[in-house]
Image 1 (cartoon, rainbow, N blue to C red):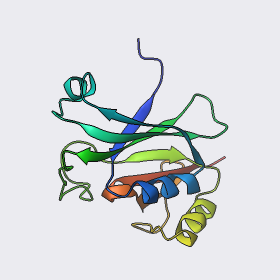
Image 2 (cartoon, helix red, strand yellow; image 1 turned 180 degrees about the vertical axis):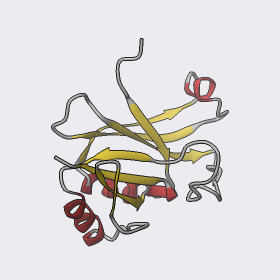
Image 3 (spheres, rainbow, N blue to C red; image 1 turned 30 degrees about the vertical axis):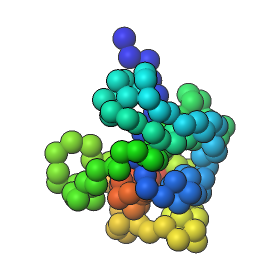
Length: 145
């Protein structure tokens, strides 16, 4: 039986920018380690893996919510030229519930991050897409009371 969502991992080239993005949303760095060689190369299916592995935790929420960042030193990461295309197959986006979408957008924009669209109202929520690290689409959702 599934219990809850545990984490999402994003491979990034600019580790500091990715950490800043998620810090604006309230994540803090909980742990940073280097993963390399066995058993990680076998587990990940990446021969010769050498990567920074940073765990970010959303503060003051239950259940625990994590974003994990992987910054490969070796091998070079493989770019996904279609990452921003929400019509592609596979992973589409990640969404976080927020108290005030406009407030979160203002904080992100002040930190140099950009929305992909205007805030819209749909299915009892205010929604907006944000350009996240490495083109990953992050959505914010404010549920109506």
